[in-house]
Amino acid sequence: MRYLTARKRAEGKGAAHTGVEHHWYMTVSAVGLAFLIPTFIFIFGRALGQGHEAVLATFAQPFPAILAGLTIYVAMMHFKKGAQIMIEDYWQGSLRKGLLMLVIGLSYVITATGLFALAKIAL
Image (cartoon, rainbow, N blue to C red; front, side, top):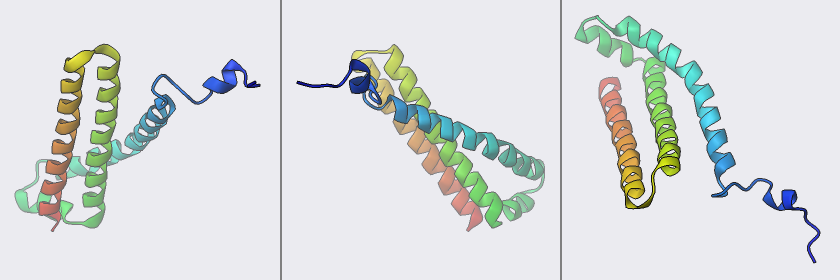
């Protein structure tokens, strides 16, 4: 005989057993982006409108390059998780699978392209 209450058995388990993980990931990445985005906009804004050499010199420095790479990565992973949750909530069947593959693939392609371009500038 089990002496667990219904609440104790359900604690920590959502419908897919990962609801809390998604929530915490989205919360942590949103807080991280709240600090990364304004700093990135400040650095990018200072480089915007300058000549090609000045922009290359700005992003060849370690802090702006690392900040830009971190912003690209965290923002795209946040987008991937958010879009995945939205698709899982509102679509069913093979359309859901296709949309999930599209969004996940798109987020990785954008991340790889952005990081490659940044590495090419920084190195």
